[in-house]
Image (tube, rainbow, N blue to C red):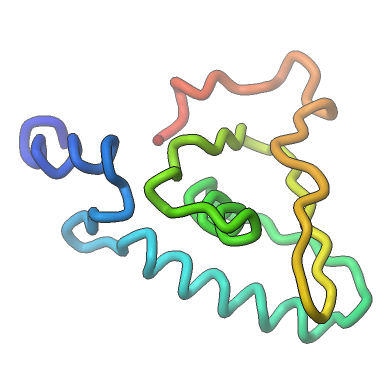
Length: 117
């Protein structure tokens, strides 16, 4: 990636919302797809509790949406592998209850530098 797409990769780290990797999605496209799926899940379980497992990019854009953050702040959100984040959805709003909870992992928490992003 660093050799073949150096300028694009640099922009990905500086302004991630402006990037669409070749053959991939932009963060806005990821958000659109993920938010639609999440909306269907929430609608199918009114008042219920559900667990959604996915990759950190998807989680970051969904959390950014709940917090009203611009997608260029993508790198400001830290989500460890196997962490728990909890969002409470009501008919009118969504509230972030927990973010990146890793207490259940103990010493098994991963080093973020070893993750793909």
